[in-house]
Image (cartoon, rainbow, N blue to C red):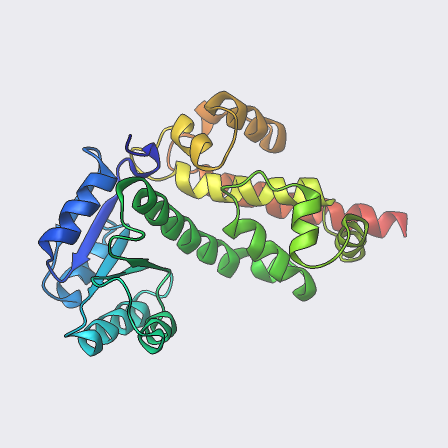
Length: 272
């Protein structure tokens, strides 16, 4: 079954590769679109005008340098765009893999290993989410104390999981008590609230995308249901999702997050 995570996605394929296009279309399903381009320069206008959500660059053993230049061009022109490299052979040399990673890809896929329908669907969805996490970090990172920013980015990158406080703390090699103390010391919300805000920030961005339903976003971010996600949004924002569905969900969530941080600073200051 094709994942609903990719409903409405537009993907650029550079260069044109019949096998890759077929696998992308299988992973996308009928609700997504795959557009082949001979060169990255041809895809750039479509990406800039938001018709393309993600670009997959085919890396062939005979044209590695061309592919690396393509990835670098895309990354330089579009720092937050999701780029997936698809290696058309199963076992590239480790040096090639390192070069691809250093060129700025979001995810890397190996032919006949990672590009089966269900796995590829998850990889594409993850790449898109990580690119959105990068945009959120760029906008909101300055509001977060420097020592806490790695946790902020980690929580955004893992918004597709219902992270427990214990697992978030363990990822940084500390206890939940230490994590709580760090957040309190920097006048930030308690861990569970902080992690939930990060999931809602990503949800807001995704909900503003054309064709994305509340249920599909809930499934992508591991909420029990669209209704459950709507209830959390109402609890944190004070308004229901029906009021927000006008392309302004993300802006509303971000503003509420800023206000929550400010309230927390004010409260901590008053108590100190």
